Image 1: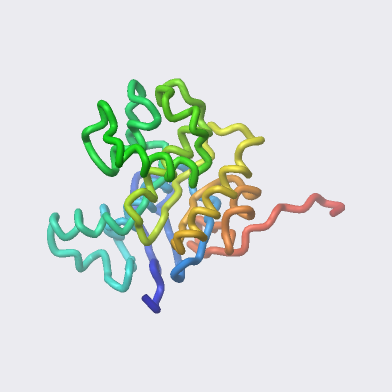
Image 2: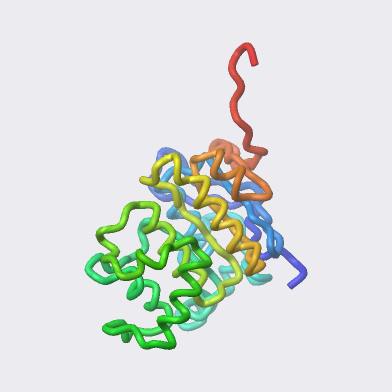
Length: 235
């Protein structure tokens, strides 16, 4: 693919927030990693839905992989289009009573008790790629902290080889000391798999570590500007 993986032009979406979500222009090239700050939880959910075509903009256009989301003609076509996306979100369902291994096996099979040997091998490779220790695989997902859970979400998101990885506030609940490690892991996974990435985050250091382009959204205008640390009065 030579054109943008994702492009939003003059998008406006009302969703019940204090103001509508506006994005004047966002374009992500194949293999490019972009992070956006200044988007709260409610607007982030709407943005993910716009990107995946689950909802349509009130104004403007969203193009994914060279096709307008508004041109997706039926439910079957939309469901098929979701294979191109890997979504990392705290809203994603995880089976807390199942092991980490079983949760990681779910993209490949619904037979997880026990996990078939060939799938277990895939899971081990995937876990290593996403920074999940072998010792964590046998533990229940519900007993894991926020960092391991985020890595499980990352691993499941890339398991079936998407083209665009979307991270929705992936550091929510994660200790500051673990955020940079997660950013490095996500960047390495995207680099190795040549994935385009859109990360929605409020953490500038995470964004700078992860993305080629950290951007900040100006909510009133929809402009995306370079995201930089605010300087004090005398700095």
